[in-house]
Image (cartoon, rainbow over all chains, first blue to last red; front, top):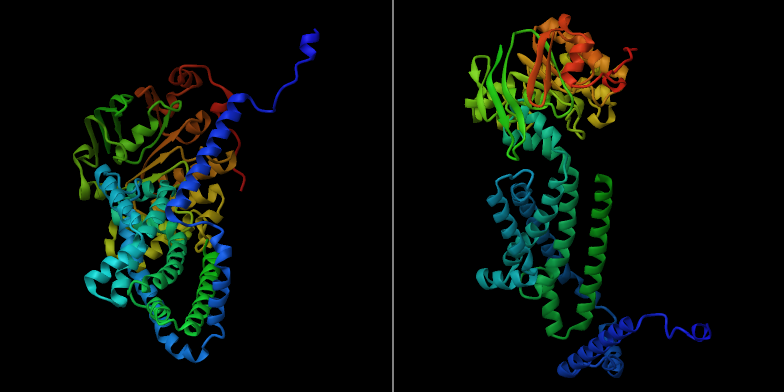
Length: 266
Length: 258
């Protein structure tokens, strides 16, 4: 009786749990320390080097507004690239997303092959695509456009085939039963069900393409990114800040318009 | 005329959908297939337009063995066979008129239909058929804005736009309330009589089968266990078909009130 009442539980967790948590913590901290030592990157450098950062930021101001005249043509080139790439990617994606949806493409090997192809496409980052195409087609907007098309197809086909797989298949049965062929079934029973999402995804991919084409310019694939890269290399910081402000404003405006359009659709 | 000759169907998982069916259906008949769910009514009806493929025997529709047809031949046969479904199977986001005119797809070229080009006659036909089921004022409504009974009427108009020789209806009233069910059955019966279109309907309500059928075929476990004119059918017949006594749920009840 006495023995019982004198027992006080040691903690709120069993010993085993405490052991596992402690060990995990030790492992995580060791990994962090090893990584920091090997790369010679320590987080306090942020504070040590902060005065440099402030000095550099000072170089960016005031922005060089007279530089604007040189920004516009390249900015429009970026937008043109995104428009061309999105349009072509959308057209190519239509048959591909049908072939990658398992309720439309019932032949297993075709479907599996298309899935495989799509997954490979999506594992390649857009910047790597741009590097490859700049190597193949030379510096300029064309290489960037090709890279954006492939990048956009990867996203669109993935999104679209998943939407197609969730549609109501009953109307397709009705069209088949009335003597319609495969293409008629697609255009009468499938397309009306997925069209709003398809347009919405296309606008979304356009937004992504605008942002992606900025980055692609850094490796010479045309557009305003190329200009940005040049001015950074010349350390012409007031021009750089002009570019950044303009790009920010344009991306915000395009995202807003496209977002509003998509809201109206779905 | 439709003729089933020793027709059997075994599904890939081994289920026997139809067992050695021998049935002859004459032109202009209104046949109701009754049986519990799983009895093979749906398989029976879907064999006729080859939405399912029987594994043995022969099935003649208009003197053609549907088991031998493929591709274009099969599509041509299907244009002559209209089908009505339990869940209406309309494209919900499309307008009523677009759903109805899709009955012409089997007669229209692929490119034309993708571009939505239909002849004046086709459009007139679609509109006339909407009038026939009294729903022409919903012409430009989206199909999902309509009630269940209205959607089923649109699907009847779609079938009529095919100008079929034969109408198949797979549980056309199972999702509807009693008054609407009678309304839909009356349209089917009226079309059968006026246009002399052979009509085969799956039902599991015995009172509705008695009211609308010329002839009743009873099915149980993939076999035809009764086949005869409605005048020979009594409650006892249904008990034999169902293999149990008749319950309340086997009756639809109610009358049409418009």
